[in-house]
Image (tube, rainbow, N blue to C red; front, top):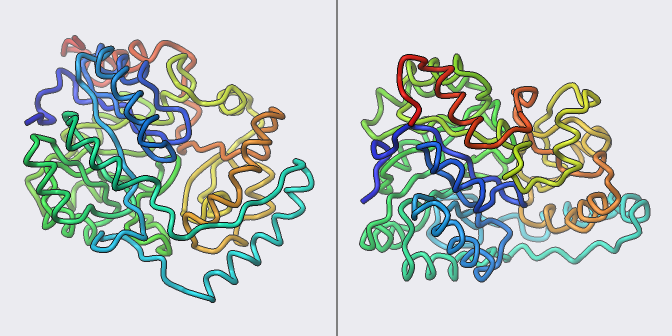
Length: 358
């Protein structure tokens, strides 16, 4: 079974759903001596399978795949699609609020489906039939039988946690390593309950706490932009460090050009954690959509994400960054429009100049 210690350099390219994570980015991370993660979220099982096969060939099978744990799955240690009529009413109310956005972009809002599982069962079946070295889970914990079956085919399981309570649950569930996400991370916070407000404990403090709780490898994620950041996280107990926003502007990133340009434009000076785009707490560049709708969206994922999908797609077609989910961590100014292998290699050299990067 793959272990984090197998990496020549303990740096991972984060799974970034919605386009940024690509087979080329996975290959670049592998060529640098690290590990690249594919994001299966929002993809069909066929699209996921095709991307895995390309990445497998480009990276010599040095890759991982990330799955979202659906709230609607029984037995998963995540949030449940509770709320019934009240939840549906709050979603409908937000839909009415978004009608002005629908008119702005000339689109029709869909009818949300709270039971959507993002093809989770089919994706698990594929990964059992065609195993990859590592599978990570976000938004909760996989059911015990899934943990057992993935272990049976030799897969290393990384479970995402954002606090000590989630870490204890992940260890008990059978994790092989923990992805420890701090408050500065871009994109969705990996809280196990969708309606929970994300914690503000610093990543270094959380790593220090978890290093006393478990001997499992800890993968630090969130706000990494320099070698000094890497050294600080390793000193706090991290066995590896995961990079997301830092790689968004690389040519291998599949992020939309409008997103890449916004990161470098200087027009956006800060980030915000919001539920406005998806119903789950997520950090992105503070744009018009967030300013106008933050605080209005209910904690209802996937329904809110479904409502805003055509709005985001239309904004992308129009090249309008103020209607996009410009996911980014607090260290977004460190993102570089240079080849990903170079970015990863130079980050490691900056952190540990006396150690070889390859």
